[in-house]
Amino acid sequence: MKKKLVLFLSLMLAFSMALAGCSDSSSSGGSSEGGSKGSKGDKLEIFSWWTGAGEEDGLKALLKLFDEKNPDIPVQNAAVAGGAGTNAKAVLASRMQGNDPPATFQVHGGAELNSGWVAADKMEPLNDLYEKEGWKDKFPQSLIDMVSKDGNIYSVPVNIHRGNVLWYNKKVFADNGITPPKTFDEFFAAADKLKKAGVTPLSLGDKEPWTATMLFENILVGTMGVEDYGKLWTGEIPLDDAKVKESAEIFKKMLGYVNEDHSSRNWQDASQMVGKGEAAMNVMGDWAKGYFVNDLKLKTNEDFGYITTPGTEGKFVVITDTFGLPKGVKKPEDVKKFLSVLGSVEGQDAFNPLKGSIPARTDADQSKYDEYGKQTIADFGKAELAASLAHGSAAPEGFLTKVNQAVNIFVTQKDVNQFIDSLKAASGDLKK
Image (cartoon, rainbow, N blue to C red; front, side, top):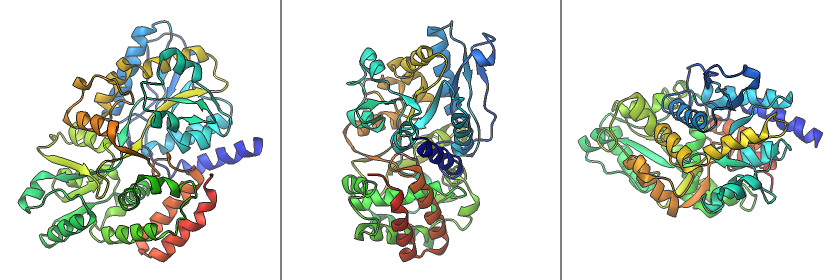
């Protein structure tokens, strides 16, 4: 176990510089909540990378609610800014290795949690909390499965983001007589028309490679379907399968329609191109909606529209932020009180409308959510769910690091055979 833990922590330190989360901000983190109650060492550290527009507001609303319900428990907002969560993950790995865990920390449900911190024996099970709060029928079973390992539940989901969204500029579409594409054929027909009109069809900002990996995972889901997509990460379907090769060919073709300066842009830059009409479409998680609305001051379904990525209607690529109970924290019962608020209807409805995500609970107050939120809540309740590879939920971090490297090379060289060989070679890091 010790060797396994050392290996995992070493991978996390390296991997944290490649794996992305749902934000990229340059603002400062580590602000304090709860007034001057107690010293920093006595406060309940809530560790995350939520420092950007919308997400920081959501976190502060959640901490304010916790303070109202637990005025005797001082809280430290220990958010670490920058690099789409990469800085936070590096700090977290260092602290966990030094046996100095925060009271609780943000982690994506799925492999990032289960093949990472749980497998490294760094988390306490929360079965008793789920029983006490009556949560087992309040979260979808498929979501509970994403935060469970070997019969135990290890974290509490606070939100759901959707990863398979194609955002588009409504005026650009209208000016060029284009309707939102539902299939790959429709996408390429629209892209050809836009390119002839002198409009960049698809914006990409892969300064950090996760954005391109995210585009590829969406193509995989659209080509293979949810069930077979999931079998890629369990080893049941090999990574040189014909459908993977087909997806790589589609990926290559799509890259022929992106902006030339994609490698110098981040995801916000790419989203901004769509917002300003400099590009027609962008594939990104629905934190982009928060960026459109909060930062660019655009109106949903007036300035920008949205549709599921080609081939993924009725499917939902899930990214969920969760918080658990690390082993060795000083006041585990206080942490559980925070998790109780985070998992409550009131807590999720305080956080998610500001964050731009939807609640993980099925019984949240839908009146608090905008048009996009209501539609996404409805879709989440009936769609086939696929765990995101790009955001650490579908497969272990060692494998994802190699996938990001392979994608980064592919975007430049566009060699399908080399790409498939790299994916196949990386499959040794998958754990059945």
